[in-house]
Image (cartoon, rainbow, N blue to C red; front, side, top):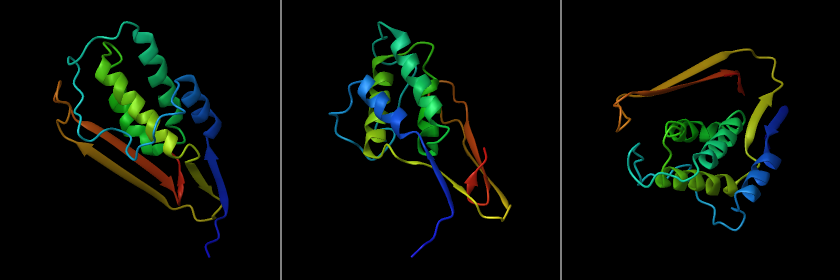
Amino acid sequence: MYKYDGVIISQRKFVLDMLKEYNCLDYKPCSSPLDPTIKLKAKEGTILQDPTYYRKLVGKLNFLTDTRLDIAYSVQHLSQFMQESREPHLKADFHLLRYLKSDPTLGIFMSTDADCTVKAYYDSDWASCPDSKRSITDYLVLLENSLVS
């Protein structure tokens, strides 16, 4: 049996409130943050009538990335479409909400371990944006088993 000394920081209530606000409580959960078969582009699809709806949702998802590292890449990707949001982008947002519904309690484990080893990981996807051909990069810094940045 494993003994974990620490605490899990979760935004469960925030996730459940967001699912309720966007009427997603009856949606079927899914296993991935973004649909791997869909490649989002800036100029494809119908422009949304009310872009503030999209922006508000992405803003809430961005707030959630503080404790949900599993959605950080997806939210960063969806944030690229804030200027001119379209229907496929909103559909991807709702796919992400369905993913959050699968386990709203996930969070960050903060260890009480006295070991202060720092580990850093970096990843990049060169020229992966289909519109700008810009690279996407991200990093993760851990203090032993606890997320720092």
